[in-house]
Structures are given as C-alpha cells and as structure tokens.
Image 1 (cartoon, rainbow over the protein chains, first blue to last red):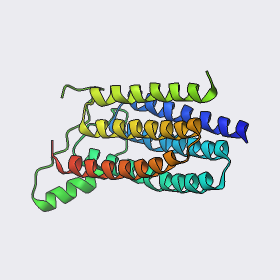
Image 2 (cartoon, one colour):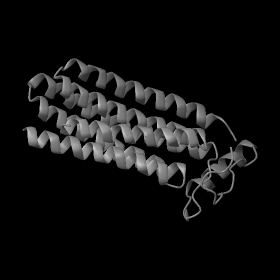
Image 3 (cartoon, chains in turn red, purple):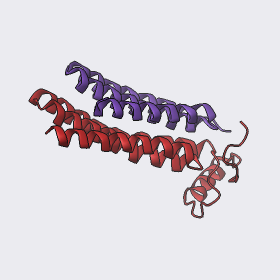
Image 4 (cartoon, rainbow over the protein chains, first blue to last red):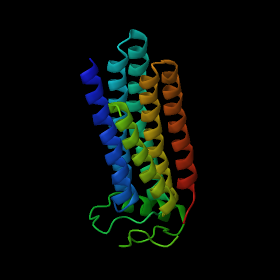
Length: 130
Length: 85
C-alpha cells in the first residue's frame, strides 16, 4: 500500500511539474492550455489516488475518490473555456499553426453582425510587448 | 528528507514556474492558465500535507479548493472572452 501510494504520488507530482514546464515553454495560449489541462489534471488526480493509498482508511478513500471525480469533471472544462476565451479575445496563434477551422466561422458571424473582423494575425513572436 | 518532502519540493518548483509564466504573461489568458496550474500545484501540496500530518480534515480543503478554482477559471474566462483587443 505504502509503496503504491508513494509511486502514484510521485508520478502525479512529476506530471504537475511537467505541466508547469509546459506552460513556460509552449509558444501560445492554446498549447499552454493543452499542457495545463491534460498534464496537471491527471497529475492532481494521481496525487489524490496516491494519498488514498497512503491513508488506507475508508473515509479518506471515499473523499479522495470524490475529489478525483471532480478533478476529471472540471479540468477539461476549464481548459476548454480558457482556450475559447483566448481565441475570441484575439490572442496570437503559434506561427506553426496551419489549420484554423474556427476563423471562417467567427469571420462569417462577425460579417453577419456587421462588426469588423477584430482577430489579430498570427505573430511569430513568443512574448510580444503588452 | 522523506519521499513526501521531495514531492513537496518538486511542487514548490512547479508553483514557482507557473508564477513566472503569470508574471511574463503576455495575455490575460496566459495568466489564467498559469493561475490554473499554480492552483493544481497547491491542491496537490495540500493533499500531500494531509498525508504528512495524518489528518483527513485537509481533504475537505482539497474538495473546496478544486471547485473554487474551477469557478475562478470560468469567471476569468468570461472576462477575457468579452474583451476585444
């Protein structure tokens, strides 16, 4: 039990650390969202599972299972919501992006609303001046 | 130094890195993502501290922190998505 718990906890911590490295090194908001959602979400779930093994009591196991379920339910949603908001606010995409299926959709909608298309073109700069 | 202490140290490094991204930005959405990862690191740290102290009371804190973090992320995204830059 203790060995399994420590192994799961360490694996989860490694995932959270990798997610942090990912949001530091990835080039644009959408790729960073990918790192934060998948790696950090799974990492926290693994840490919670490891804690359940380390406690070894029924009470802790029930609560931690509930926490894992909440984690799996909310992490993808928050990642999606951040990505959508970033795209809508016109955050620059990575210059390697070669498929943007949302752009014609928003362009058509903005044309229908009579508003000017406000999306900034993709800039190659990693950290453009604010 | 026990295994849990090593895990907590790694989580502290992860939090520091996400703090760096939150400072560098460049957009508000980047800061929201960084705050998300920072909160994940804190939630994992609270869980490990619960194991370390042997008290299951901290697990309730984990549950509430997860839900509050989700709420904060969604609220921040509503603010970011509305602004046209």
